[in-house]
Image (tube, rainbow, N blue to C red):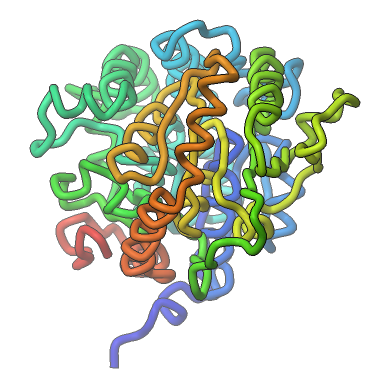
Length: 426
């Protein structure tokens, strides 16, 4: 009898290198919690800002010591400082220099130290942490790359024109890691590894790449390399799709960024002004973004942090910034969305929603009258029908054990990709 994932993972020592990028943390901890429940001994190497959440998930925590002291919850402690960027290209430069390649040597040393301390048998890392991937290769550990987004690289089945139409993410990401290649090779040389011809090869040296996305949402899913596995967003869909909320009033959720961005206040003000223009519609602003306002319209309610799943059954529409977790949750619940993107994959998500008929994207500096018009359009019954059609397709693709199986089939001895025996969609 073949041993199941529980038997295979029992007492396996897994080290995960995690960057606190905001929304990626929740998805990653859901995945790692599933591994721990199957007997794996999981240690998370990350920023101090996630320590409490890691321990609450039943996992061990060890901090970066040489890597950046980063906490995205305030402007003073946010190393990335994406608000400094005026364009998506500038955002890419900041990510390249302050996360992916600038601190790569420090993160490599942190990862080597943590791997030795916890006696790791397997390593996994965020796709942005090239230093941790170099450490896995240097130590000879089987390792997994986790991509909490759509697949970010060009594939054989996507044309340049098609990629450009989807949004700037793939183009900018490919350019960004190409620019980081000299620094990556410098770090590899420091640790006795041969140079790479392209930065993408660092991913190809891993035993598996996991994309925590539904294949239907990612246009690249039919043409990714065979070592790439779509494992879904780790969020369980509802047992059944909710019907339209009772009552004549439409209900709109507003869930914006968890990080401190100066331009967020301007967007919030525009959304409040748009809400005043839309009749028979109730707006619920989540996350404390209206704490500074005392003169709210009668159809606007302000709340602190509330899990989206608690409010989505009562929503006709979600307005958000395009974070991948929020995008996924709205789609799983069959609720249309309007995205106000600011960088990278958020633009791609907005365009994909438009293609699926389940939402659209608007500029963050849109006029309140235009926002109000879009709200009226996307609270229509036809839009909810399209969103629920998407939700049913995503539910059919949902496999709660997909990510666990990828880890379980990596033998603790030196296994290579060609003998994993896992399908592309696992």
